[in-house]
Image (cartoon, rainbow, N blue to C red):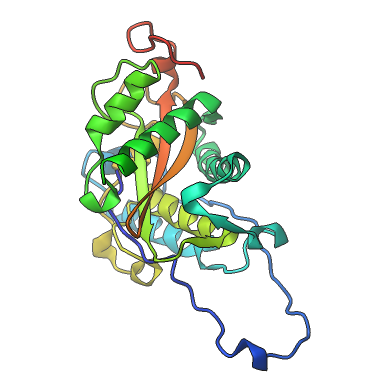
Length: 273
């Protein structure tokens, strides 16, 4: 779980726009990437996952938060990202675009660490939707400071996974009073949430990224990189993504089902990837 609430969705907008010259502004579109800094290795991550991050690893994480700056780019990846979307009512194609955007970033980072890629799954996407529904129907959100385990377990069993705890969800989130936002803004939110999890950053926004004391939690990174000191280290997961809305809190559900769970008759009773 990521228990941070970032107001990173609140970006500055130009005022008195009617005074701006009517010449078309040049948009500097940027492709989102996730570059892993020198010093961020599986071995150093595992030590951090166990609660013993080295000073050099923390420095690498701080560098990662700084150099990966797509969350500070307002234009998005292309003109298409200026499309406005309703986060409470995403179309199937919009949701898949966000899932593929987040998965591309995860797999880019995994590749740099020598790990197998995760695989998008319509079955996991369906599971992600059920988990988001559990959060919304029961008034739960990332603001509660923990995963909604009872809802996650119900959703897993509904989809044929015999799991009795949270083995599938990593979560980040943000607060905003907006009902709609551009695809570019939503991608920035996803990007920032992934940065938080990968680099162990517990701050609420970009303006706190230079505070070393806020780098302190790498359980999410252990999940994203299948690096937890178990016999399943180095495995890959099947992936889906969803968003839930509770009040003005949007929780982003990064749902992944380990391949060993999918292939296990003990855990997989009727789950279809």
